[in-house]
Amino acid sequence: MKPLFLSLLLLMCWPWAGAQEMNDGEPLLNRPADRTYDIILESGYIKVGVYRDFPPYSYERNGEPAGIDVDIGRRIAEEMGVEFKVHWITPDETLGDDLRNNVWKGHYLAKQRLADLMLRVPYDKEYAYMQDSTGEYINEQVVMFGPYQQETWQIAYDPQQLDSVQTIAVFQYNPVGVEIDTLPDFYMSSGLQGRMRDQVRHYPNLREAFSGMRAGDVSAVMGMRAEIDHELAQVENERFVKAANGFPGIGKQAWDVGMAIKHTHRQLGYAVEAIIGEIVTSGQMNELFSRNGLSYSVPQYYREFLDEESIARAEGSQGQGSNTK
Image (cartoon, rainbow, N blue to C red; front, side):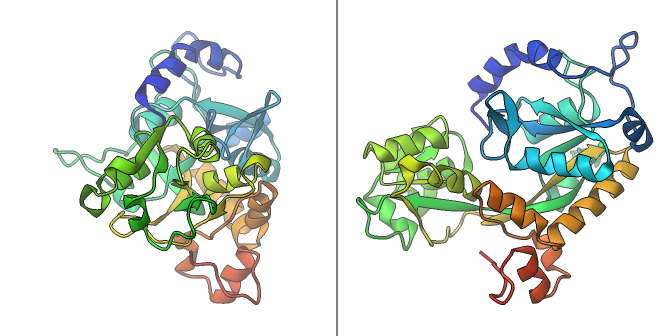
């Protein structure tokens, strides 16, 4: 997530941003309408929630929604036979806040504004069934489902400054850029018993971190693989390359990314899950990622029951085995 100060700044603009989107709430009750699967089909559109200003996943390009999550949302709408409408999400402090504000309750400044479907939600059973101190399920108001991508951490480095990055130990002696207040920030600052801490340089986002690498201020940048891929695709970053190192002690090296709906809208979830399953297993999801210049890995969810040939087809690598990353 972005730093808290940025979230608060964007929050100040929330009512204006919401006004640009369709408001189909119930004004007398000051609450969002209950848009079930049948109502969505009858209305002729679906509102898909994606994060604002979060390239390469979702952002505006020339005033229009763009990014891989936007493309996936459009594809879901197309398969349902309805129009795609973007629902921009301003990140709050936690994922739980984002789910509450955009999926099941609504933000206190915009109670009538909800998405029918939210993308870029970690597909994590432990988180989905997390309980509070009284034994109540924290996320009982939402259903997290439909993993469509496996995301992972990645380092890109400048070969003019480093010969290679075989292990993270190289950053005991060479500066590395990270987005502030993210897991790469905490990992690089505390890894190897803190021996890399003095070499960590903080940036507001990965775009600025790559700018720092072009200026020679850092020798490498760490972030999510899709963000790294997006920056490496820029002409000004063409000399930089991806490292092949692992990240010992990071917890989760790779994780599945899925979707979320309100718990009362399971029929919508079943329909969308079937659409996503076909797009993933047929290789169409890989094609969407490729068009955005991004690498694609099949979620672990599908690896549990697909054979090697099916995984290879889904990742566009038939005859080459699966991409386990």
